[in-house]
Length: 449
Ligand SMILES: Cc1cc2nc3c(=O)[nH]c(=O)nc-3n(C[C@H](O)[C@H](O)[C@H](O)COP(=O)(O)OP(=O)(O)OC[C@H]3O[C@@H](n4cnc5c(N)ncnc54)[C@H](O)[C@@H]3O)c2cc1C
Image (cartoon, rainbow, N blue to C red; front, side, top):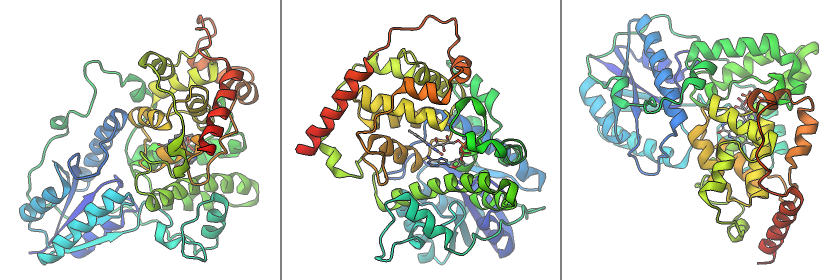
């Protein structure tokens, strides 16, 4: 009797899942497993909002599998041990997964693949979560692209990404193996339960992802040129679904390409360009190991960040800085698990430049509170804001949150969603002009050292 094991990771979907498709084609039982791995070396433990998300996402996935005569097997521990045990328990003679691109994840996966081969078990991996795997997009000199626009030009000249695979209708029964229950993992917050805003904002899972994509294409895409206005709801809201692989970039790419007809062309191609930033950041992470902890531009190692008190940081975290756009964004983040991109830039710049706080402090807060917290996109964007990343904003460009507000939310529509008009505002915690100058002086000091 043959059987296959599918190991799901950042690809919590049945449609367009090449590993699942290959396991079905293998023949015999198909056991579908998810491993909560907080033990393998170098793997970054996910944050609290992400834990909430995957609880619901895994539950939705299990329901979809059950509808097709299968189920999701949950196990916890270092992946190498757990996969070993699952192969033994299920009697699988082949293991399938979709590739991950973080350096630690690659090491773990390569070790597991080698160990499986040594024991005569097949192991196969597939491209599913990026349209262009990092080693396929290189400059003429064989190096990584460090600037976005040439990267974007290069990938547009490559063959079109493959078409998405359909969702399987029925699944072979799984081998009889036991697993944990989701409740065993205690992923949901209880004391206190702070997830009410997340529940109101999101439906994790593949069906929620498809609904979000259709809603965007049918109702919001035509306003995508106003995507910088946070009151506008003209962006896709797909980032957490892409983060957890509840939808694949291939599905998104091809759905948008259907729109590349004259009337929608401009909006669709602007959107696909944004989607390519996700790929560019993964490309950056692939080539720079410790993107969440080390400055990509090592010159920034000498940057004179300030030591700040927890009280000062708390004003930023809780949205009580006295600057409306920053405060609205930080409250939106706490309530919904996301923040509009333009506001992420303003809130990030405020922390790094006006408060002169190390970008890693902000990155960690976002890591814990974002439902789309992504091991490449969060640190790469923080390094972009700080000026220390690949294709980063020049350090001397300091966003003025009040001017950003005038420009992108002139009628305070977005701000008043999160900071009621009648609320008594705290005194602004800094003088924007003086702290801008302090940031520029600090930058000069770094350049001289
Ligand atoms: C400080 C900071 C931290 C960020 N952290 C994350 C993060 O952890 N995870 C994350 O997915 N995005 C992150 N972003 C990027 C961006 O803010 C979000 O992707 C975007 O707000 C998601 O909303 P949307 O899906 O409606 O975007 P849309 O405009 O609809 O874009 C479609 C998709 O393109 C991708 N995308 C768009 N902009 C970017 C970008 N600048 N960088 C990378 N991918 C992008 C996302 O996958 C997004 O879902 C961060 C930005 C900043 C400034």
